Length: 501
Ligand code: ADP
Ligand code: GLC
Image 1: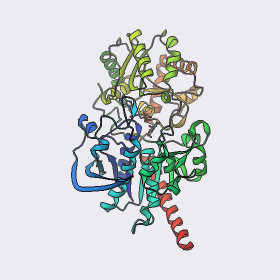
Image 2: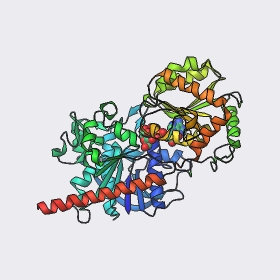
Image 3: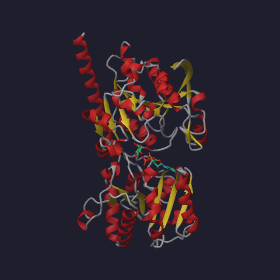
Image 4: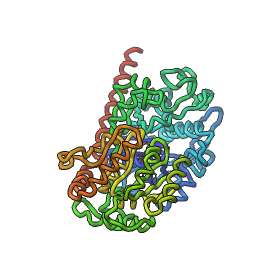
């Protein structure tokens, strides 16, 4: 199958969160299954320059002229590939839109022209597919930044000879980010205003690009089965639960996998000593190394808790704040790595300043350190308010770092609570709770501390997590089934349209 994946970020070219991991790991897994996959991402020169592992880019001599509102904007197409994979990456180079320090935000403020930037990118992807004669059977768009693509395919691309049956899939990675803009931005899309209605692109008077993707795609996926159910409720649907329920027969949740070439303690080049489920000795070395590196007392007996995350309310930092006092009365160590909301950055930094022998906080983005924390910690904290999938709890499971999570979205689908000894001897791999409250988090931290003292039970929990297959293999096969459904649905629709004529 020929597949084009469009995303606003993909590792190793650019990354602000899990979307970037998925946008390259899924294509890699699909290509290993024999599919022909290419990825489209914007080229962010400043981000690329800061990244020592960024692959080289070739100018293939193609200039696009992309219509955005009244303007025609020129862009170059650069070509590269994923390291160690047969996946072509096309980077849309338009310095006016993308040569900036951030991807979407600078100094905590969204770029004011974000709508224009990603309307442009969505149109550029469609134009490039035609120019490069890629003729994909599937165009797979992700999140609001490429939400316009399914609409462009439906309204324009299918009028072009050869693309009449072009099928689309749209994946939602986070309902909290919808790409909502004022109604006049509809003009930027160059689509007819007839689409600006409550069933398609309009949402309470605004243009909504996530809703656009949901409305026009042949199939919709999200990144875990539980989140697929949750987003059809008012609590998690962020206003779009109605739009999702209307398409519930075409909405499927597929749990993300992990790129085990990048996240594997047996091969990880960043960690102090490699280890595996068969020989966990290296994990103790990694623990001592990270304690030393971050200035915490080097002690094997104290439970070491870690967190690597965007510091936002989604990730449950308020719960850590609520239980910090009682928690830090105990004999524990905590490591925080992340950045985001200044409120939470300040709170985590203050905890470290007040308890230098118990807490280490690193504000910023640091890839090697994130691997070292995964390898060195005993427990990983992820008390999210909502979590479409979550990748770090799966990285933790692979690294024998037992996660404590709130049982929502993909966390509920990957972490099995150690509620009793049978489960510990069976499939349990972590601790889960439901109430979004600091005392519920604290209670689970206490449960983890007491089980940590029981070395044999703890080892079982670690191994239960480490021995399960978290790779993309199974999920990629599920995506192929969704692609086939999208192609079949399109064929049926165009036959019906043919009969009507
Ligand atoms: P989200 O996409 O909602 O932020 P995920 O758990 O899906 O959450 O993915 C987050 C990804 O970003 C993981 O790969 C995680 O390791 C990485 N990450 C987040 N913050 C940092 C940081 N400060 N330094 C390094 N990696 C980070
Ligand atoms: C989003 C979600 C996260 C998910 C990631 C990749 O950023 O917040 O839960 O793992 O996308 O799908």
